[in-house]
Image 1 (cartoon, rainbow, N blue to C red):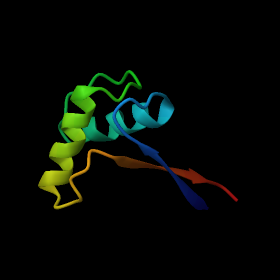
Image 2: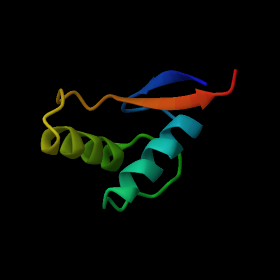
Image 3: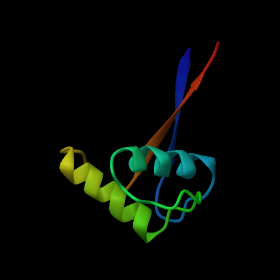
Length: 68
């Protein structure tokens, strides 16, 4: 299996954002899983980055695993 990554940031829309929102919700955030990277998603990403000593840029990489 191989993984590919899609970068998402404020203004992004689609399945990758929906997946990000779902993963953040598993970590205690309460985001609407609408696939729109708006202010609430950006705030949650930045909070997660801060709490986990990650680069605080509001950008997330969403992993997709593909069978090969």
